[in-house]
Length: 307
Image 1 (spheres, rainbow, N blue to C red):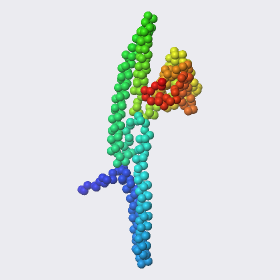
Image 2 (image 1 turned 45 degrees about the vertical axis):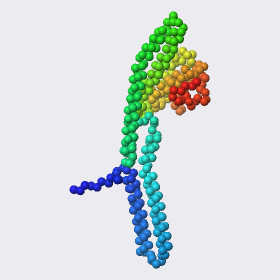
Image 3 (image 1 turned 90 degrees about the vertical axis):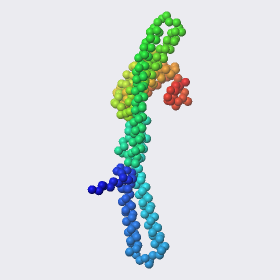
Image 4 (image 1 turned 60 degrees about the vertical axis):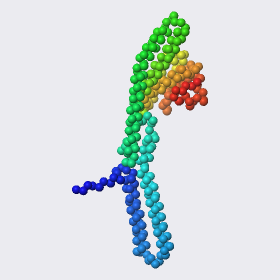
């Protein structure tokens, strides 16, 4: 039995097949109109009544009409056929920088599927690389936490002695401060490692009470702030303020803001931790020295500290 002929140049799902399907009927219609006009002129009218100029003008007008009509159909057909490409471009543009999930290749025209397949392969390799990096950060932070905690305890024991010379006591105090800073950095790295970057940020969100979260975290920082003679004022509505968010990232955010206020708000004696309901929001404010206006944008850069 003879094999069926496969139309390789019009694969299913391709833009070319879509355009041919949309424009074939219009092309046949225009050809029929052209044929009917020609038949009408040649059969239904007397050629002797037409001059050569009249026939030429009529042919030119009819051809211009056909070409313009077909051009309009081609324009709208191509615009409609590229709709999936525009949707794909918009989907990629709206993606978060941390979203490395593969693009659904089923929604992509056949002509673009090889490109998207290679792009998905690149996203997969990048995802594996970032996963290895996250795993290394988590393991390193976990391994460093134990010796750093021991170092801090040894420094605290030495500081408890009354017979230490002043120069040694100052050095031990610096060691204690550095160990505290390193332990805090390790906790931040562990929080970063626990946050699953492979999920779309909203995929890991859950219902949280912003008032309870801020109150619990504020109680943990209350004694630290009191040691530095700084009052922590908590202001919040009596009812719960529910939001969709990540508990780990919100706690880390609040801890960083309170820690920065404690370390760098010179002259501050009060920090306000406020929860608002409409719209749900958090506000941390201190009465310290503030940040110079020329440094407002710069302080959001990585590893930059205000003078």
